[in-house]
Image (cartoon, rainbow, N blue to C red; front, side, top):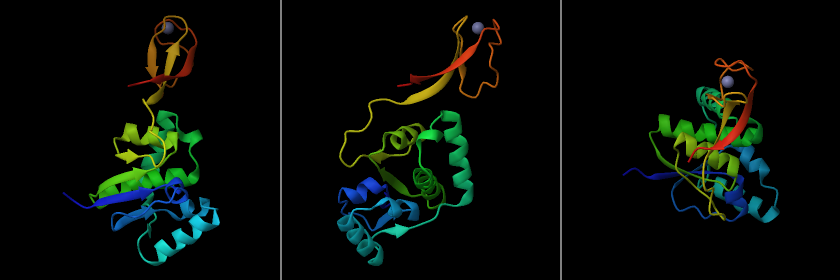
Length: 169
Ligand SMILES: [Zn+2]
């Protein structure tokens, strides 16, 4: 078994994450979200000691992530920092072939992680109970289409197609 790499959201630092592994990663935008002075001092110290590693995800993983979340409908609910952190998780999984776990309390991020099949844990909450996804449904014949169905009307009956969220499991 490989070492466990932690990918850390700002909530991890705000809630006093104690590094348990030597591989603890985040992105610079996340450290900017830590405003509380005590958390900030602890974080800066951990970075200085090499316990937290700041890494920029490779561009191709940022692009891959953006494409994915625009399809899943999660792009509007994620901050730039969130997106970058998710791209970093993809980067570490693919480039380092690392055994990773993302620590975040953000439900939108957890939703994306669940769909991407990337292991995660929350710091203080139990986590979400299901995964939501966008579908398009015809208001006439009720046929369901994928979120990326490109038309506004149904290919079967010609009625209007609308977008809605469903719980997928
Ligand atoms: Zn229809």
